[in-house]
Image (cartoon, rainbow, N blue to C red; front, side):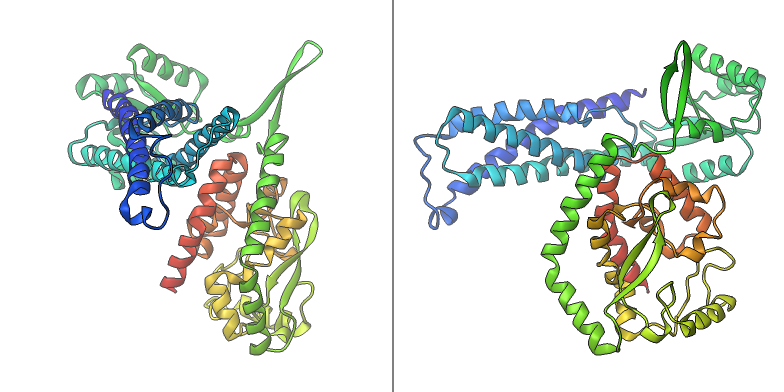
Length: 476
């Protein structure tokens, strides 16, 4: 562990303290400002003077620091993900303010300034996030400019994964790594000479498919020389990421789970889906009506496009979208013969079909799409009815994209693993390239999401989706 990592993490505690106290004072001065008081007079000068208010802010701040520690904001890391920190700050501050309000309620004290609580909550999130943004910027600057805090890593491997890791290290200094060298195999003699000549902090075994004895010797070498040892897992090791141990009598057993979306994980995700889908449908109901009217005026036919798609455990469900094609040329199981005929011709055209020989088709300048439909597709507004699929339980807010039935028939056994979860309106593949991704890369991202699901990951994907859609539309 680098000394710089300890220093920067330690700085976060007093910095968060100052930012939280500053946000509390800022809320107080905003409330007592003459520009505000002329509209809403202050009634708490006697019951809550500044000195007493400051004591309350300091006490609340100390409590919030404890909450921050519990949610993982002070974990020692070489590279901090800002969106991850922001979500934890949001959760931590919200939890702290909730406890404060509950405490006031139990004390049965009159506190007649909701402004202080609401604005204090908002400013606390902004101030702490801004402070961490500055620290992150400064840390990355020192790492990139002077290599302060960077880890020198020796890569062992000669396959494609090894080269990809080396390329990432060279192209992005913010990752916190500098390349010390690359050996094709775990030769301890060469590794020892390299360590004595130039030194390094970590050994990364990119190709773990070596004899067990070689890897054990390498691990012992790292332990004896106080080096960090990391490796890229092979197929079997990735299968055991979500494993559960149990016993059958006196025999130990390990159950391999593809995803953590089971038990409470499944309950939490479903609750999250219902709340936010219902909220979205209510808030954007006027937009639904406007789009429906535009489709009806632009071309004859139904407003909603329906098709059967495969979902959880490969069960079929009726999938909804706003119709973006001419009704007489729609494909899918509710489509027309003429629509299927045109699609087959377009798929054969290598210049038109952007997905080539893969199971999924993506047609460039599809002649079946209407003018309104083209806008809906570019802006992804055609997918708004899928919130009703989420409410029905057929889909989730985040997951893999549900593909057409005849496309799924072409999937390999590996690709069909993703049916252990529900499809989603958006997903990791959608924020990582959308239709520009190769189909195999899309499946890999979907499987990674399923294997590594967390509520934080869902929030990150949902927050990134609108920006990805807007940028994609801008480039089109």
